Length: 579
Image 1: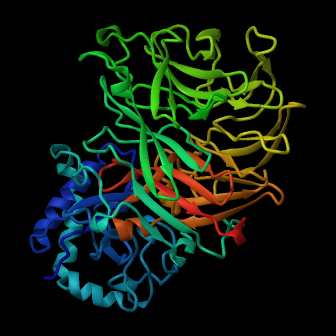
Image 2 (image 1 turned 180 degrees about the vertical axis):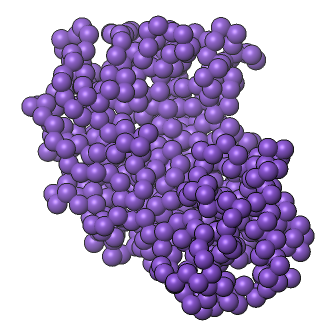
């Protein structure tokens, strides 16, 4: 029997179930033995119902997905192999044909037609059946394997995915790849009604970040990036603890090359056994002095303790012109990390929201105002922002949600000083744009835990709030980076920040403020999975070029592990006709 060496066996199961991974591992091992002894490299699953695998099922239904490939074990090149998906349908043998090609997910994903009564295939799918699963006993055996897998799952270890190698590499050892294809305009089934799709596909450059020479836990992006002076500045980290590391890079789109500006571990120079941050979770902002300012965050919640000599996280800065990096402050909020920030470049005040180093810390999230010129704390107090702040250059004021409460808004006025003032404004601030030429700041609400993420417009002069639209274009809600173009007409974002963007095709969304409409400029998946063996799963760092013609997006990307394992950069060249 001719079976591909790389196969993706997909069962319709929800992720939260405790025994899902054990069941899938059992199926993988037994199926590998059954199907000519070939090894099935990885397993994924999609949302569905546990009832879909109950032992009373009538028959298995198979579907072929020829557009999904996996990386080979040599040189990181993609293996363009066929992929087999296994699902189940609890239907009688004489069930009428229903459905359309590619409709839905999980058990209803298979194409159905006249042959559904027996095999679940239509047209050329019969050929696939004959090629891979011609013996009817094999179909019955696989069904039994899934049923017996439930009983033996508890005894088996969870599936861990493919073991990836470092540093990540593009096929042929290329430093970048550039693509323009109509596949970017192919919408997934999850696309909501009323969402437009661009008519002209963008050109997209893809690169892996340097420095990823060892396994992180995982390599990831958590902070927002900055595009200024013809360059893009972004940060990645290894997420290790208690001694992690993070880096700041400059990217030049003309040469398509990175330059490392900051190696946090090297800059801090701490002895072995001392805590070192594994993330830069803050924004990167440019001060009027020409320095980039940012702050650090922990790789684990269990290491910001006295055992590892923890006194608090750092405010750092990097100078693109000279390539130097410096420590601005350590422990500005004692024994707290600094995961959120924004910079007032005129007053040279670094604003931050903290995270307590210990869960027993009674202070909770603190709001920090730090004068970087005088190296002095201007204010530190409770009800700080958990993840994002708004800064208004026109007024000099700062706004944020206290903790994660989007039913109120805190205002800090540096000219008046004192504690922030609470405003009864219903606006979510999980991410915020810069103030536009029209004097408006745009925000998105949290969008986690089943809640809907909403786009808001905030006028800092009148402090009025307008609810604009829902953010989602498919199933994903969570947005952590929101940027406005230089004209103030378009907003850009990617839903599914913490993984899951690929479920909606990893859409690059443009929101037209004038018409209040959403348009997808490109669906990057499954193109990059198919052609380069890397899945772009979500982002915390997006920046619009000051010219408005490019989007820089730093990705948490997956080359075969369970979550993500690599940081990659894409540069989206927006066609003039689409902006």
